[in-house]
Image 1 (cartoon, one colour):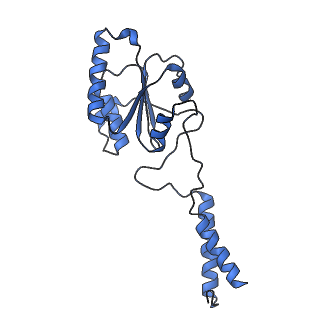
Image 2 (tube, rainbow, N blue to C red):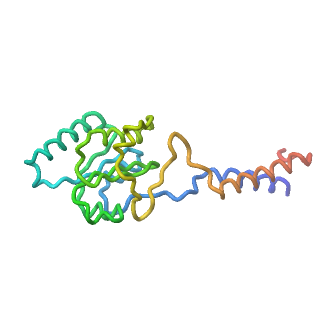
Length: 192
């Protein structure tokens, strides 16, 4: 009987170590490469630029900054063009946004720049946040607006660590510790 109690206590303590937190996913309509990048913890830049504007000076400036960013941070970011319909599935209130850059990374805030990016510091500010670097006052000045993604809030591991313990996990651990320590302190030999 005591052996059963001891094994139950161990089971309760150890069963709490499985990750019971709900795993969040990007909406199912997105292509698999975007989902894979998200699941692998890669930073993601989804953008749309109207192709009919490609002969303007503004477009040329955007394109130069965008290419600079891809050259500097391209391996750390999964970068893909998407359409408005995909954006509206991801971000509430984005129906009126024409051109945009949406930055996503599991466990970090998501940012939406609701136009083409004409300040290269915007890319650098988000890259600093997603890489865990110190965020300067200049970064804060160029930070795009933080947005909450639709369907489920995207949650990942906190920066640099394991997911926080949730209440049921703590409860299991405490029950296991109480049962185990009670058996050990009673002087009963639990393992033969």
